[in-house]
Length: 303
Ligand code: GLN
Image 1 (tube, protein in one colour):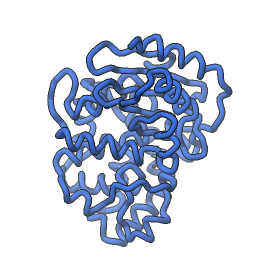
Image 2 (cartoon, rainbow, N blue to C red):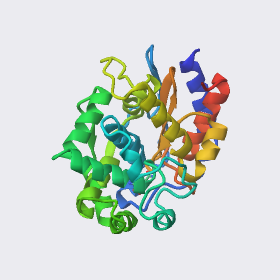
Image 3 (cartoon, protein in one colour):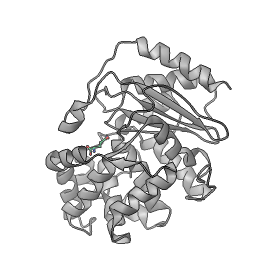
Image 4 (spheres, protein in one colour):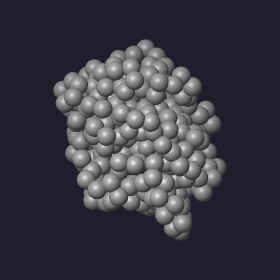
């Protein structure tokens, strides 16, 4: 399969379509991003990767960090995790409070804000310096010690992320948060503010395509079965109330972020990262989704 040719052709097609959607402005610092950025990087597990467009510029990975938080928790915490949250699709917005109230502070899944906030609470219990542990973990997966977080974006969300404070207090009032709301959200905003290029992101997430083993170092992070489950959760919950659309059109496990990034995993084959900041009303990158749809149309079978 000539991935280089396929991604170049899909990129040229999608580049020409009208750039619908809007960049995320509810985090003021994110509103400064150039809406015309568009980059792609595809990293196969057994050969060199290939990129097109702005694949070498860092962007805010935002909710894509939720799969990394989940992995850091899930590699050590076993069935107890599923007492604190479920693994069903929410069919609701990423920052919705509705289900959380009805379901008594048990988030539907780890990939909505509520679920990732509980993951952060678990990490605060596991580690005395969870921010450092998280960053070191991400750097290890990426095999890149220059990966870092963006201070301005972290501060911007810390000052304005009122819905996330509401979510955390709702969980806390239902006794599903052990630590202080401010401490839990501090880690959550930090994780969301990690920046990567498309190339770095596809390399960081390549272990999900490689049965839970880091390509290169051969270090196993997740057992085969837990890696399968992380992919399953991405497939069913990675795009909130648009998870069905993404499965229907793209057919791969994936995760989006309001920075305009998407990572998608083709198990045993490749991981692919796309970045285009304009989002649809569900908070997912318009061109990113269209590019991935064209990619898997072109490559045929997804699994
Ligand atoms: N930091 C963002 C928030 O909590 C992440 C949301 C997203 O990327 N979907 O609102």
